Image (cartoon, rainbow, N blue to C red; front, side, top):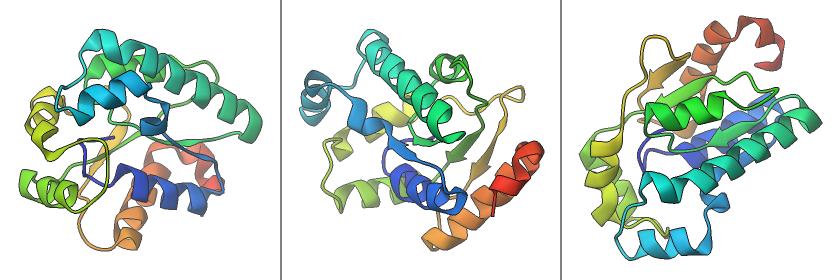
Amino acid sequence: MGASGCGKSVVGEAVAVRLTAPFVDADDLHSAEARASMSAGRPLDDQARAPWLRRVVARMERETRSAGAVVVACSALRRRYRDVLRGADMVDVVFVHLEGSRALLDTRMRTRDHFMPPALLDSQLSTLEPLAPDERGAVVAPEGTVDDVVAVALEHLRALAPGRATLLR
């Protein structure tokens, strides 16, 4: 989880490979209308996010039933969005919040081809609610190599989900 540009997709995909689990990029589940709105520099409100979050949950449930686990790259900026994700049937959710500086996120957003423009970064950062103490998750700095970030993320996942340690190679 985290703001745009933090590396959710790249790190999430690499974590999924290490876990031999399917990977889902929640950005792929946005409607064409939502993508167009964000591309035009208009952030989504809660009403526009609701059907997207339902699609993310449905995909999490399907992948978990099929493969036993799934790694999802999803902004999950607000607690209430994370509550929706945690409410998924058959899914034991652990969050890895990739938290980078505004400067790092802005630089990354300006050097990639994505529907989310850098103009929406401040909106993302102002919407972002950090993980609360009662939310199972960890904050990881998305700096260094992808392998470095993945190693730290996996270390936290081992600590947060010890019953699944055998999955975390």
